[in-house]
Amino acid sequence: MSDIQEATNQLLDVNLLENQRFVHMTESGHKCESEHLQVTIGATIPTGFEQTAADEVREKLKSPCTISKDRGKIYFDISVESLAQVHCLRSVDNLFVVVQEFKDYQFKETKEEVLKDFEDLAGKLPWSNPMKVWKINTSFKKKKTKRKKINQNSSKDKTNNKREEKTDERDVKNEFTSNALDPHILDYYENPAIKEEISTLVGDDLASFKDETDGSSKEETDHQVLKFRVTCNRAGEKHCFTSNEAARDFGGAVQDYFKWKADMTNFDVEVLLNIHDNEIVVGIALTEESLHRRNITHFGPTTLRSTLAYGMLRLCAPQPSDIIVDPMCGTGAIPIEGATEWSNCYHIAGDNNSLAVNRTANNISSILTKNQIQECKPSWGLPIDAIQWDICSLPLRTASVDIIVTDMPFGKRMGSKKRNWNLYPACLREMSRVCRPGTGRAVLLTQDKKCFTKALSGMGHMWRKVHTVWVNIGGLHAAVYLLKRTAQPFLHPAEQDEEKGTPW
Image 1 (tube, one colour):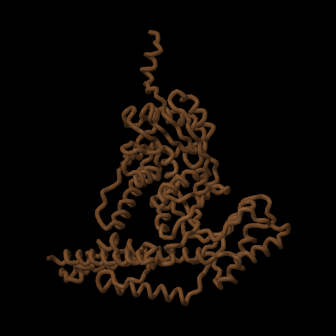
Image 2 (tube, rainbow, N blue to C red):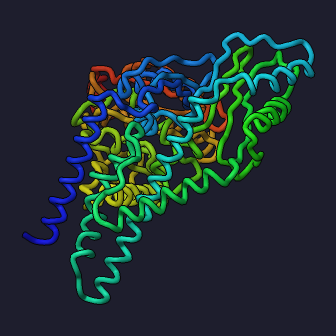
């Protein structure tokens, strides 16, 4: 038996042993406390796509979901063991755990009284369970960092092996572990429902590495005072206080309660104070940066959020084997999100700008590299192609496309309002040609609503407007139009002239 085969058997034995131990813990009823923990998670959503996000939560997490009165937020209940799945939602920007919600908070008449109530509120809130969730979430992020360090160490071992041109049993085990450990062991330990009481993984090196990292993190927790900040998001015109005043006084009370250190930039904990009219939600942030920054590494002047791209794609309900085209792809945010989430469809990204096509190609390459690193095996690629073309003359057969999803030029950073009056009708005409009659659909985002409405009115025989979603794009009031292709076949201008009977 070879060394690699022997290491494989050891790995499988350890994995089986720990699975049996976990099953035994479950059957005997000695589950860790966090397994029973039920919490409410809040999520910020691109405005207008709250219903889309709620549908995704119900579909993927099987959890009831409510849409907040404050636009751009949803709330749903989960068990803590589902926390990792929450981070995999495609439609949410930021996540936070709810400490307490006040649906009809009665504000006092004067500013001083209101701010004094905020000070008193901090000591009355049920912080215990939300802080447990925050700690689990933090340890989850630390394990990702730990995984990267292990992979880096294994890479160094490989380099030294090549340099010395010899391999012993320990090097073989390390090299195998760097490939097999990721999906089989580390993902297992990343389950928040499992206690970190298992001392042996595979090999002495990994066991000692785990002890060192766990020990150092314990020291940090014991000896370092957590740094925090309070962020107040306020909406409503009847408040006698400002957001800064609420954050200042509430934050001072939180500091006194926890004995934390205030730091507005380099903080460990971000406490959220969300106020919408008479509704107050206190929460603790679970994301350091927005989850929409997941696909794009090469940005353009009008790069679309990945979460907004997901919402647009979900509107048209892609089916297996559908051909989905973004004829004005920019940096490729929409087709890359589509190829990642709907890999059973074929996605085509096109643009008339060579720089945009290059950015799209680079972003696709980055995604493939990222997937290859995460899976520790060669990537099979993504069902996507990037092409340079003219939107008004697409190199596609008539009635060959199932779905068109694109972000049309607003006439602000790209193009101009004047050009849109000619561009929009030409785009809709060419889209009607390549889209399948009767079943084809299009989801189009634009801020130039007047121009689009005029262009669509001239194409009423080809396109029927089904739904409109109003969104906020960088402070601009924009619209996402869901269109359905009518059953009328497309006729070229020459064929139209023949039907009309052009006189000689």
